[in-house]
Image 1 (cartoon, rainbow, N blue to C red):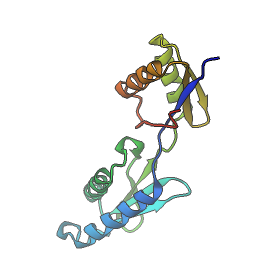
Image 2: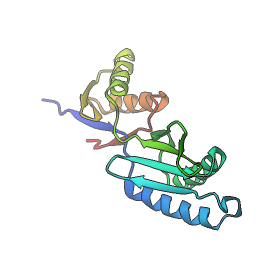
Image 3: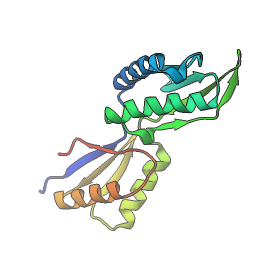
Length: 165
């Protein structure tokens, strides 16, 4: 009986690296002249998987997010998984913006990926397992084709491929 091979498609964000990037970005913001008297801050909430960026106005928020995105990109973090919310006016003449951290593949995106694999008529089985997608086949070549198909597609989240066996 032939053996079945599989791999998992995941979208993970390491919150430890995000925390380190927030700390480095805050040090840079504290030393930059254009942030003087801007009361800029970036807070990470790992339990809720979000960031809150605060500053004097929307322009300073965008500048602080740019500093953070630069640090995240240098560490290889997927910027697609960070979605900026609406700017809210806070107390004390400041503004804040929540940034959601998407970790895991949402069910609708997983269904979209499974449909793309099915539409390509590859001889693989795609099954949704929680916040990941498992692709299985008897042929390693078919799995490589599925990986190439998923890499070429734009599904709104950064994809990583794990547990190739």
